[in-house]
Image (cartoon, rainbow, N blue to C red; front, side, top):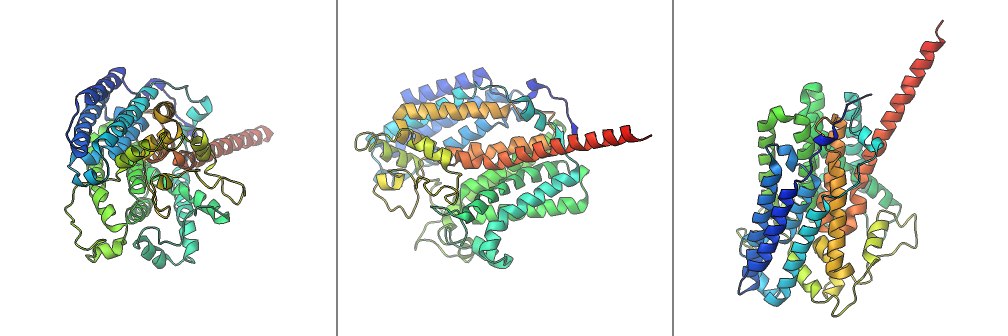
Amino acid sequence: MSEYHHDSSASPQPASNATLLLLVGLLVTSLFSGGTTANELANSYAIGVGLSLALCYAADYRGNIRNLIRTDIMALSSLYFLTLAEFLIPQPQVEAMVTLRELEPALTACLIGIAAVAVGRHFSPTPSPQLLRLTGLEPPRHVIIILFTVCFALGFINMLMAVEFDVKLMIDYFMAPRFSQPWGRGRFGDWRALLYELSMVLYLVPPIAGVVLAGRHRYSGPQILYVGLAFLFTLFYGFTSGTRNIFATYLATFLVAFAFAAGRERRKEVMVVISIASAAMLYATTAMLEFRGIGFYAYTQGVQEFEGQDNDRAFFVDNNLVVIARLMDIFPRQHDYLGFEIPYLALVRPIPRALWSGKPEGMSLSIEKALGGDENYTLAASFVGEAYMSGGYLGIILFGLFFGVVMCWWNKLGREDNSPFGYLLYASGFFAAVISMRSLFVFTTAILPTVAAIVFGNWAIQSGLARRRRHHEEANDEP
């Protein structure tokens, strides 16, 4: 194992003027947006916040695309996408879901969440020397391939066991309606939940693939073919799952690792890959909604989830903003804030019930129950809605600052002179950045793949040191 020398100034960090532009843009949006209907007001906010983020990213660019490959930018983009982006196109159905009066505080809550993350990303401690050391770790190429294989195998082992290792049947279930598959963590968990948590190392497959494909000159043809096909299979699973967070995370972590590993001299190649991935995500945003209820196979056969469904309907994400608005109409007027219950549940979520029989089963008042719905389906409110349930506007500010600080801390690992292992380690953190914006409950489980990569890196370093000591001792023992 060898290690790279690092320059801490090379890590991508937000510029102060970029954050100032964003905050001013959010304030202007809040003061001057208007509309006579809920749809018009949401459209006005979507345009204002979108322009504010665009100006912020332009100021952050500073002539180097790597300055934009940061967890905080991914998180801000994800939060905007989840809450406001769909209103860039008129959403007339919203008028039947929420009133103008109910929507106004929800829009304010979204702006506060974005602002809190933006401010928090300027404050964090320096990562420990041991963690920084991992970003310079240079395992042999065959070790990277072995790590890729282990992550790929463990990622699908839970699914394979559920179908008695019938690969064809597993693929058939890929293309079946969402939630009909015989695998999953389950609400209460058991020993199989341990395998489910272990399968999350599948999220390391895309960044490892990005490192290998960007550095393909260092690998053999069969290795590149193997990694490429395994990555495409993983993307296929993510797409057919109908869960856009999974597919988006696969693309994001792949792109981050690829962009860093490719280097500045291959900027055009990186931009082509980013353009292809962006087009794929835009297509998936609508397509995955249209087939997740009926399954990908039925979708390819021309079946529609609802009779008379219009395939040219407006761009749609998840109605998170509407859910936030309805929650804000309930808390605290009809129900007290949940307080520390939410962060506590997030903290203990990775622990399987098989190891802790007394583990809490969920929130005392779930989003679905609060809104009078059926708990057999789930409603998303983004971290903004969950944070508001916890502590109102103050809860949004505190959680937003927390995420901003954590992302600022992680950005310090994204150094230009990282080793390939450092690139994939850095890219793995983008999974938590993206998915935590949808729900703060998943943050503690989303970091598990990154923890696995850190454990592997520490093992590799210790093994290398032990090997060197043995060689040194053997050399000293020679006559």
